[in-house]
Amino acid sequence: MKRRKRRSSFKFVLVFAVLSLAVVFVLLSPIFNIQQVEIIGNAALTEREILDVSQIALGMNIFSFNARQATQRVLHLPYTATVAIRRELPNKVVINLQERVPMVNIATNYGYSLIDDTGAVLENAAVATSSLPTVYGLDHASTALYLFQVFAVYDFFPYSVDFSNPRNIIIYKNNFEINFGSTEEAQRKTRYIRSILHQVSLDGGFLDVSNPDIPIFRHSLQ
View 1: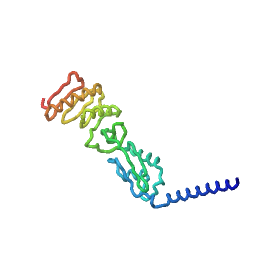
View 2 (view 1 turned 45 degrees about the vertical axis):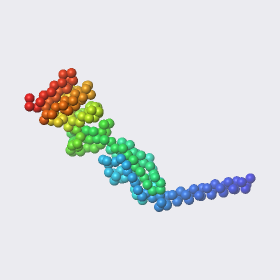
View 3 (view 1 turned 135 degrees about the vertical axis):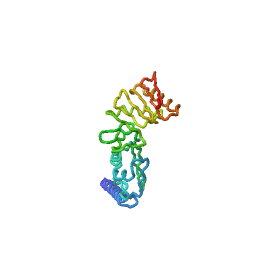
View 4 (view 1 turned 180 degrees about the horizontal axis):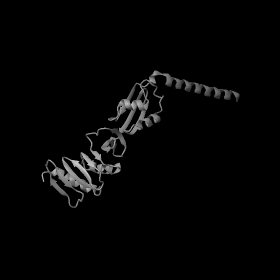
């Protein structure tokens, strides 16, 4: 009985010692030092920004960082929508992320806020992003988000939108001033606007779709 106990104790100590040596080998061996960090899916964010906030660096042991904590840190970057971090043994880390897509500029008292389709503020700047429409006179971004989501469905992208009067929204597109009215029947109004702008070849004009049953079109020279 005593011999069996001694043998069991010896086996336990031996296994523990082997495991300890294995752990020490993994942590100290240069084989497991990170030699490559591949970042996939970034456009607005630079690799340097992602690496800095993740706290993952070349040369560190591949097991020395907490992947969950690193993921949370990258998620705190405004442009990050989703992120997944995985280890590829022995010495490679892959950071796969999906970025938020900016939708519109929101004019504020301090400049412009760039937001995505969920209303998340991606960045603030003194100058609006010229490739995206700009919204003026808006107190609640949800109204603009809804309207621009409707516009996106119909591939209609105005230059700017004035929400100063939410019952009388003004849209500017291709030298046309468009009285959109409220967001009621937004899809029907948007379809009508696209139809008009695609059919006429004019330098500009005025279009009133606030009452979609009686739309009004006027050439800029009238």
